[in-house]
Length: 229
Ligand code: CA
Image (cartoon, rainbow, N blue to C red; front, side):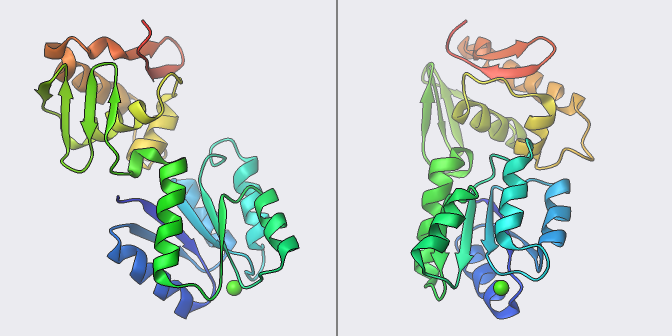
């Protein structure tokens, strides 16, 4: 499981400890010391998860979580709050702002990794190694293999990620901007027609298995993976 995780933490020692452990677990790290810096990073690329310190200088972690939840583009990002407080009321406030989980300091690296894994599995299945099966297609992230009606399908890395995202978020329409954000991690510098190019390649690769029709174009909106024609 390799996710891009944004750590927002103003204490350098804790930030370093978290970054070290999450890198060891195979994740990519983005780091910010405060909410303003974190917002700037999120504007460029969407992380798969945010680890957010409650007590930050300037805009607090709670306020930052609220802002992420209030914005359509960032609403779905899973958030784990880091808190030095263990009082019940604070936990409730944290969860009310839309955090998916919280970890109380001091925490063990093992606990943190376990929580990150659990939240990703629940909220960001496209970054987990779980095998996905749907409509005759099977995608195995661990071995990077795809089969369609038991025939092997040869996909490039971008088509693989695109298919993985679409399969784990099936029966929903995704705009080109959303796909750029979710699959490319960049909606600013990559052009929207790039999505069309890779969708075309993906369909072509699926053609021999006759499963290319699972990737549907929704006119004027975007693309959808659906087992219903
Ligand atoms: Ca702090």
